[in-house]
Length: 178
Image 1: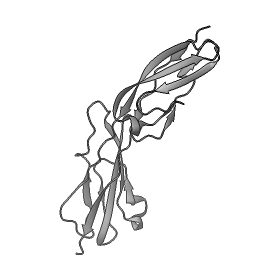
Image 2: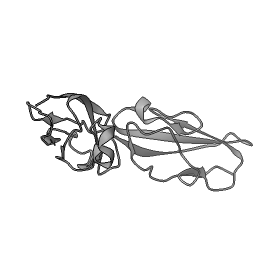
Image 3: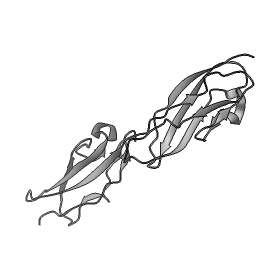
């Protein structure tokens, strides 16, 4: 008997996501014919391990080819997978920062390419562990009162509506003594 291949839609994935094994629920031979299946396409190994960063950003066609053991009959099917781009975190901070004054931060220049979702979350770390729970924020435009004057490395990563996280952006902030 000839093989009958089923290849359901593959869920979209973030560019920086870990490798993903395409499961049998997505691609398989449905007729009970003995044989082997092989995947081909950008970023996919013959065994179905998909690496988003190797495939690159965009939509890619993955082909599944199944060959029967007995007669060498072949069936193929393909499916598209979209690799979403990550957002770009940007930190804006007021130019002059003085001790004992709250410092305003802004992420409004953070961006995401069109078609890759929207920015829905923020993860700030002010590099000021002595401030306890106030050392982090999930606001788009937070303020922070540093515990003393000195140099601090403030970090921000943003999260998209597709679940993709940007790389961490770091900005040095000098808090001047009064």
